[in-house]
Amino acid sequence: MNWNTKVTELLGIQFPIIQGGLAYLAYAELASAVSNAGGLGQITAMSLPSPEALREEIKKVKTMTDKPFGVNFAIGQHGKLFTHYLEVAIEETVPVVTMTGGNPEPIFRQLEGSDIKKLVLVAAKRQAQKAEELGADAVMAVGHEGGGHLGKNDIGTMVLIPSIVDAVSIPVIASGGIGDGRGLMAAMSLGAEGIEMGTRFIATKECVHAVQDYKEKLINGTENDTVVIKKTLGSPARAIANSHTERILEVEKAGGGYEALRDMISGEANRKYIYSGDQENGFAWAGQVMGLIKDIPSVDELLARIMKEAELIRNRWV
Ligand SMILES: Cc1cc2nc3c(=O)[nH]c(=O)nc-3n(C[C@H](O)[C@H](O)[C@H](O)COP(=O)(O)O)c2cc1C
Image (tube, rainbow, N blue to C red; front, side, top):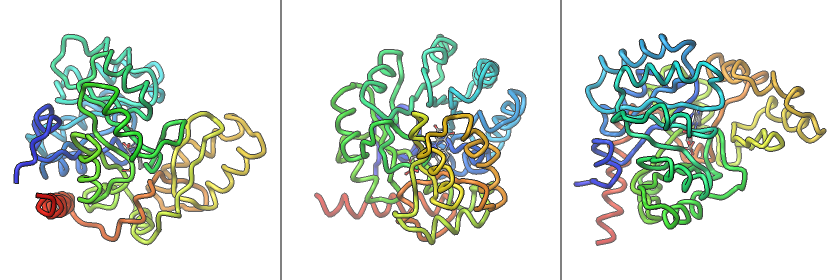
C-alpha cells in the first residue's frame, strides 16, 4: 500500500514515521534500525560528549544504513559548544536536522546555504508559525500526552495538531501519545502528514541503551503512571511516576526553585534510571502512551505492525 505524504516525499522515506530525539537513548543502533525499517531515525547530538563524538556516531549510522536519518539538537542544553556540534552535522552532510527546546534562529542561520532539511519540534501554534517564518521544512508538534518536554499550555495532541495545521502551510508531524496504527490514522485525520513517536521506540530491541527495567516499566505501566515535573520552572516534562519524581514535586510545591531542583532533574539523575534502573534516585521520561505498550518488538516488526494496523483502518474507511 502506498503511504506517500508530503513528509515521506520531503524526507525521502517509505513510511510517515519519525523517531523522536531521545536524550541519552537515540544512538546509531536505534536510528539506523528505524531508517532501515522505512521511517526516519535520529541520533541526539546533546547525548554525545563532544562534537568529535557526534562525528563518530554519524559515521557509525552511515555504516549501518544508507537511508536518510536525522540529528536532533536540544538547543538549550548545548551551551557554547552548540555551534561546533552543528558544524560537524553540516560537514558530515546529514540529511535532516531537528531542533527543539529554545529559539531555533541561530541554527537556521548556521544552516543557511546547506541542503539539510530543517524540522522544528514545537508545542504551540505561535512556535510553529515562527518556525515557518524562519524557513522550517516541516514542524513536529507535541501534545500534552507526550513523553519528555512539553508545551506550557497543556494542550493535547487532538486539539494542537489541527490548530497548527490551520495556522501554517508547511507539513505538520503529529507527536505525543502515538504508539500504534490507530494513532497514526488519527493523526492523519487531524491533517498531519506524519507522526513522531518517542516512548514507543524505547520499548524496542534496538533501543539498546535503555536498561531492561525501563522497558518493562513501559510494558507493565498504565496511562496513569506518568507525571509532569518541572512545571514551576516553566519547562514541564512528562516522566514515569516514582518516588524520585514525587520528591521533585514536593520541592516544587514548597516553592523550591532551580537551585533546589538542579541535581534531582539533572542528566545524571536521568541516566541513573535509564542506564542502571535506579528507580529510587533517578527519573525516566515517558508519555501516557505507555498504557498502550505491551511488548518489546524489533523496530522492523513495530513499523510493519503499525502500517498493517493503519492499512486495516484505511480499508474500513473506503
Ligand atoms: C526519553 C525521552 C527523551 C526525549 N528526549 C528528547 C530530545 O532529546 N530531543 C527532542 O527533540 N525530543 C525529545 N523527546 C521528545 C520526543 O521527541 C517526542 O516529542 C515525544 O516522545 C512524543 O511523545 P510520545 O513519547 O508520546 O511519543 C524525548 C522523549 C522521551 C520519552
